[in-house]
Image 1 (cartoon, helix red, strand yellow):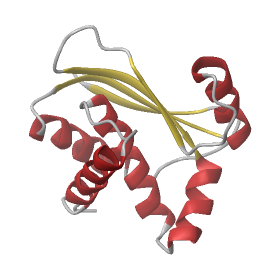
Image 2 (cartoon, one colour):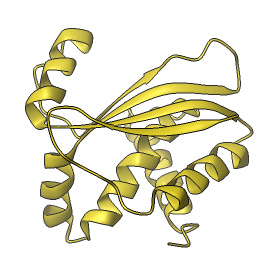
Image 3 (spheres, one colour):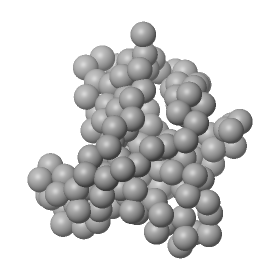
Image 4 (cartoon, helix red, strand yellow):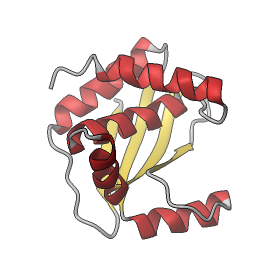
Length: 141
């Protein structure tokens, strides 16, 4: 049975409409030809995510999301996605969108990484943004 779990580390953050979020993410995985086994979203502070960025990726910068792919089979999703609630709030204000829209964009961004979409080059970033927009448009909540 596939599972999408929501956790908090060092903050209190509870996404709304969890059942709808789970279904949307599962539908995205299926649409991309993947099977979802387990996906954990861990909401945390900037400081917590910075520590992960330094420890595991040797990056000394703040970020909104870090995705860890733990899958051992092709086309099967098993992963952990860490999201800074503080970055969500700040980016929502910066990009003039609701916090919910920014949260959903970042959540689907992490899932898209697990589905094989990189974002290190200008070309791959463009495709990533197109995919984010495509799947954001499929939300029914």
